[in-house]
Amino acid sequence: MTQQSTEPQTVAEDAGTGSRQPAGRSWLDRYFHISDRGSTIGREVRGGVTTFMAMVYIVLLNPVILTSAQDITKAHLDAGQVTTATALAAAVTTIAMGFLGNVPLALAAGLSVSAVMAFQVAPTMTWDNAWAMCVIYGAVIVLLVVTGLRELIMNAIPLPLKHAITMGIGLFVCLIGLVQAGFVTSMPGPGGMSGAKPIQLGTADMLTGWPVFCFCVTVLLIFLLQIRKVPGAILIGIIGGTVLAAVVHQLAGLTPKDWGGTNAPVLSGSFVSTPDFGLLGHVSFSGLGNVGGITIGVIVFTLVLAGFFDAMGTIIGIGQQAGLADKDGKMPGLNKALAIDGAGGVIGGLAGASGQTVFVESTAGVGDGARTGFASVITGTGFALCLFFTPLAQVIPTQVAAGALVVIGSMMLTNAKHINWDDPATSIPVFLTTVLMPFTYSITAGIAAGCIAYVAIKAVQGKWREPGWLMWVLSAVFLAYFALSPIEHFLGVHH
Image 1 (cartoon, helix red, strand yellow):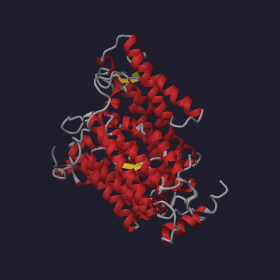
Image 2: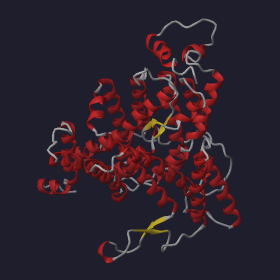
Image 3: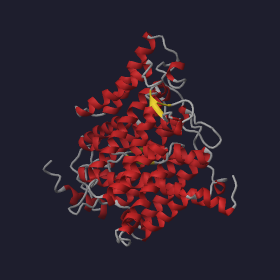
Image 4: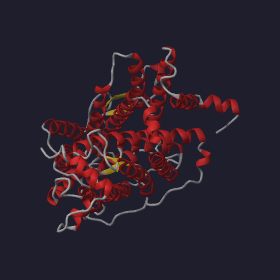
């Protein structure tokens, strides 16, 4: 640990100037600067495996989110194909980050991006068009990085709203998990002023069924493991919940129908299979014109917000933890890492897995000694091996995987500690952004309300210049988004 204060300068010189390397070292050591960063090949392998174990749960959870939604044609995605696509995209982007970025950062489908794709993008278009939107947003992020416009956008969006977006998506993901598990259900019959509740606890305000029991145990188990700071708590919790579900399934004589007709804790046939690349390359830009320019603009902006800002903070935070940042907190090669992260949106869209982003679970590997991109290559190789074990992923019941979603939601809510709740100019936009995402089942609605409230409050306070011109433009776009129906009626547009 005493060497870390001197490592950043060494890393900057090696990565930035390409200084000569001492002879007598393996090509791995020379290429990844392993010795220069005070690490060893064995430590990098261990760190890469640790990161993989900490985030492999995404191979299980991403299909839960994407297959629970349907596109404008009412089509659902195949769980096996989404599992393959998730593992493929994670492997490609993480290995690319290792070889090209040479930093211990692992990428996979971002749950926030997947939530936007499933519940905001897909309902307005076909899945093929949705993947095209994913490609577009990834290309936009790369363009922002290359041109330096990211600085303009980063400065335009107030930091409290960035935290609020993460918190709102966390609540949204939590609600999805509760609904998927059957812990929360919709009330039958009319709602509104008739007195019927829009949602309820379980069925008839009671928790019923063994699957819900397995969900509750999974959530509790993961939380307890996290409290004990057990590495890979989410993965261990999912495995434990699945084992419990398999035992309950046999002892209680359950059928796949009892698990909602989706994944049941029963392995039929071999646990190894040929990858199903049915979603690979299913990208279509034709027909996007029918969606509408405002809608497309809002979707792209939402996807950029969902994937870009979290990645910036995560990359810098992990870079500092790994001792890769200089004394001013700047990380050599940051733009390269951000560009690869943006390219993850394109790769995820082409694979059919949603946008790839840097995972904060990369800190697990860094904490275990990872300092170079070779650890990322090891992590990516782990995802590549997952391509052949899709049947194992399908054994995990949706209720068990949903338990992990609730935990992820709670982790995203920790951003609340950064909010000054005593300042109404901050707390009101943050509140609206956070609660409207789950309450309206729309991520865009939360972001739009937060932006509009922020500039409106600043204007009332006489600080109308403070938000900056870009926030005023965004607020105008979001006002048009909320007023889209009357605008279309005024223009005579009919659906």
